[in-house]
Length: 589
Image 1 (cartoon, helix red, strand yellow):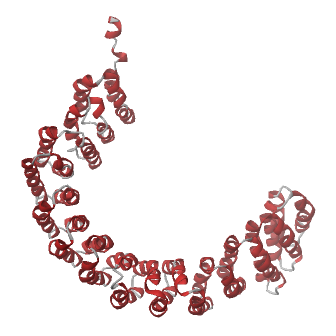
Image 2 (cartoon, one colour):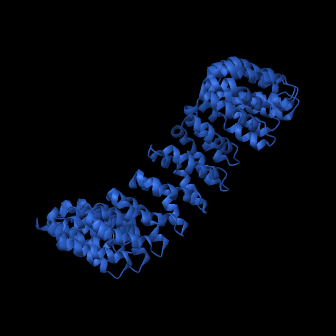
Image 3 (cartoon, helix red, strand yellow):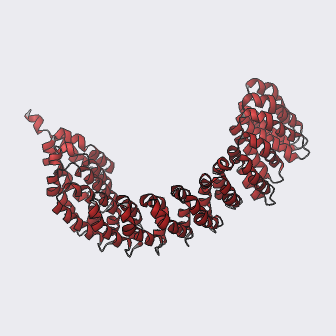
């Protein structure tokens, strides 16, 4: 037994010390991650008397090690003897809360907040509050930054006198000379307000809020927008206008675009917090101004919130406000010089259709929709088409097609091929929005006509669309409507159109499967091996290689192989090459 006691090689502390002195950082991190196991082996008394002092000695290690340590200490309460001894964890966490690396400090503060709830009121006052005060009074900026996050967790559990001291400490941080400290205090003001009584919010928090909202640095002012949401949720309706709205309206007109952007971004949260009456009198004008802001980023942020803002308006005045105050601004945004603003509008404006109803949608929203559909920016067109179902559900597919089809036809026949290409690429999306019956009646012929467009990029896009359309409507639909029309192109006098047949078969075979490919499409490919144009013949070889992977062995050997062997004897060198390549790939050589 004496020998065992004298052998330190198996002593948990000795093992930990050896590992923490290792040059390998990852090994040191791993040893920290095993601290709870070591603490269990040592027992609560030795953990407090030996392990925690050792931990304090290693607080000059690499950031990775300190981060792991800060995380571990947040779960250590049972290992030091429970809530009665949880204050023993404060010294190492206090040191970690003032280190240079922000991520380590944040994790230490997170652990301090976690263990604060395990302190009794007396331990809070005797141990936790003094720690907060030391951090507040610290010369290091990092110390004061960390302190800002701790007030909300210790304030509720202490006496009135201590609460007064904590309030004074927080006021000092909010007026600190250092910008980073004021930013940290501003970020935590909302959480701190949630644990105060209503009278204290009015008398203490509102003055702090007003001062920070007029701070000389916009980094502080923009943080107050979210705080405004938090405080507005805590105040009674009758107190909002006098205590919050003045500051909020100032933020919406701030000289810094970053502050105005934050207001626009959080606008619907602010709207929910202040309620419908104040929204009508105070927020609607502010929202109009943000939609007309001189900075594109602000206009885009406001535009993103357009639909939700309108949905949240009280039904008593919603339609009137949208038609008379919101839509006039929206019309300007539809033609905004910045594509990101137009894209933002396009993503939400169709959401107004259910709110405004059929007649107003046709009269007021349809012109905006058609203008956005003609936009030169792909994202704008995509966003408007993606939300087409909102309008379809309100005005019906017949009315929608009445307005939409002329525009689609106009774009589809535009002299500029890039304009035609844009509408071609969106056709599967439009097909999904309109449904099979409408597509077959109104758009299918248009899609097929693009297969013989004089621009290759159009023909290629139309070919790729066939696969998407079959995936959408099914292979039986393809067999009945699309495949027959594709196969007729093989008789076209223009060899480019005949080649399009092969390209279409390549993509259709992927979604139609073996049976349809073998029975309906393969014969046409084999027939085209006799085409007088070499380009067509070598594309036959490439198509056979492409569709060969889905054909059965019998078909490959009896129908495909003879044609490919014949093509290997072709007078054109390219036809020979691709035919031989197909034989090799299909293992028919």
